[in-house]
Image (tube, rainbow, N blue to C red; front, top):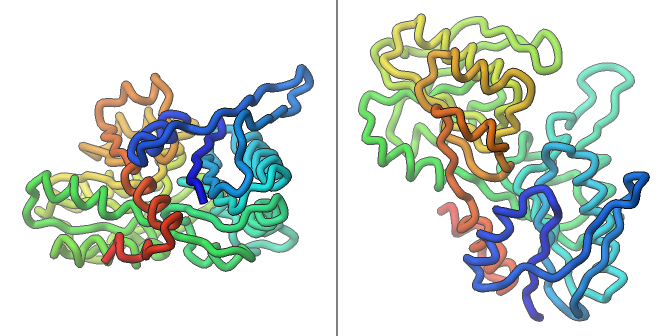
Length: 311
């Protein structure tokens, strides 16, 4: 099968980096909007019998980007592509993964069903908010971790007396993995969420006094949790406070909160593109995951191990 990579409109820059890593050009296509907002899509090259990867993080304007992905998948299915893989560096709706209140949907499952129904044969994603979302799909899922990219940068910072901090109980497994790799201590913040996008930090479990602390999380949305955690760590006597978050959603007051907080540096990836305005924030450090995703795509195409990327 011939390998081909196509990209929706969500993150063209990352798609170009991945194609460059693979020594390919992005697939030729035509995507435009009708005056009422409907999406028109046409593949501009032969894909019969091809191994096709559709790169589309489900971020900003998430509903539009989901619809783009579904329409693209349908087009490739009807054009006789041999295999269609949805490469989703960021999986939108992942935070709605369970019924935590009466009469609410499980939107993460709904989106998984839509992607499967559109004709996708497998999914490639990174740092899911909840790993069990893999089970929502009726097709194989390759779940990548940005940890190797993040840890390489953190190790180069040359910090000593490091404590990795999980901003909530749910992120302990992720934080423990970072702490093990860095031979660092572990601390946990007891957090109570009082409303969507509104969190109240309670207290820190573990010793952070005179330590270089690194908050580790998967999604940085309004930055409320992260900045509150940073401020609490500073009050508890932490020497320095850093943060590492894979997906920089950065909605609403996020940038303003980061600028005013005790955190010195926030390390993120380019799984989600940042606007020019957000890139002006001097505390943000953006690392590329193009090589990681590109290598995973190469291994899936060649039917070799993806897991060995993280061993």
